[in-house]
Amino acid sequence: MIPTFRPRPLRPLAARLRTAVRAGARASRPPRRRALALALGLLAGLAGAPSVAADAAWPTRPIRIVVPLPPGGPSDIVLRPMAAAMQAALGQPVVVDNKPGANGNLGAAEVARAAPDGHTWLWTTDTSLTINPHIYRSTGFAPGALVPLDYAARFSQTLVCNPATGLRSVADLVAAARSRRLTYASGGAGAPGHMVMEMLLATAGVPMTHVPYRGPAAATQDLIGGQVDCGFLAGPTVLPFVQSGRLVALASSGAVRDRLLPQVPTVAESGYPGFDGTFWLVLAAPRGLPPDIQRRFLAALSDAARAPGQRERAADAGIEMAGSTPAEAQARTAALSAQWGAVAKRIGLQVD
Image 1 (cartoon, rainbow, N blue to C red):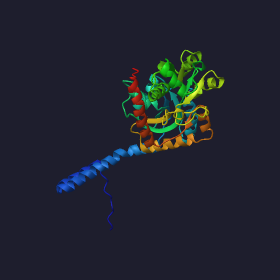
Image 2 (cartoon, one colour):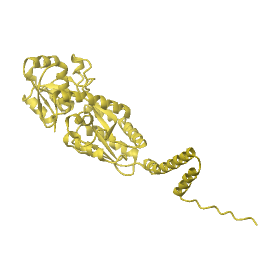
Image 3 (cartoon, helix red, strand yellow):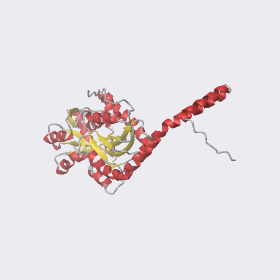
Image 4 (tube, one colour):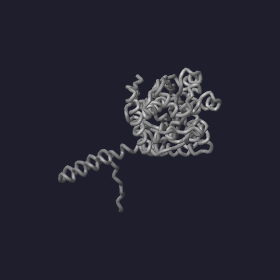
């Protein structure tokens, strides 16, 4: 009679691991260390298994992209069509959630506190990461809590003056600032126009008096009215007034000319080689994001940025689509943080 084979039931993994460790204890010390390392490695592998499964299942609910700026601005014009395209690619709704306040700090801090599971992202101007940490005692999030992943688009500021000033070029402005008191408007302390004007004044070695406003629209109105002399403001905001002759455009802050005002030279072309006051729209995420989720989201974002009509829509808002790798984004953040930090230190800027 052939005996019936009855397989021994497998003991729980934890029991088998304990047995392995006890077996190692009966051997010499080096084998014991190897057994213990094996046991710990197996346990670590089991602990990581749910994470791998979760990464593969992502996204499991709607994805939220927080924009720490008011709705309807250039950042929205660029992002919202991309979010719609990404929704089809990722299989979940991609919701653009405007959370303005504290010069971008409120929305950025909310993302920094979110779980790094790929369901919450930040779409912001680079100033949230490169300027705000230098001018606020507390941004609401720790350094390094947000990781920049893509410098997706760039924009510049346009230096404009009231026609009554008689200023028609950067050279005119610098000469006038040496001989008389001039004022300039910005959209607020620490805003791009404020920082880039201070960088120009430091480069040229001349003074001007800063008059901050609550946003570029109010600054533009007082500039047209003659309450202030000049200002570095967003191209789309000042474009119709430049075209109508109510403002005069002297220069663009970026490394290349603004497509909205191609006849206007850059500051670098106006006698200050190397001057670059470019600003960026940046995608960032909470630290600890799994690499596979990061890769898949960035791929969807890149595809959406190349969709038909996207570059044209962005250009109409004074923005040029760009793109970067995560490593490039982090290197650029460090460089820009050093640049704008030096400007903030020179003028002693502290907002809170």
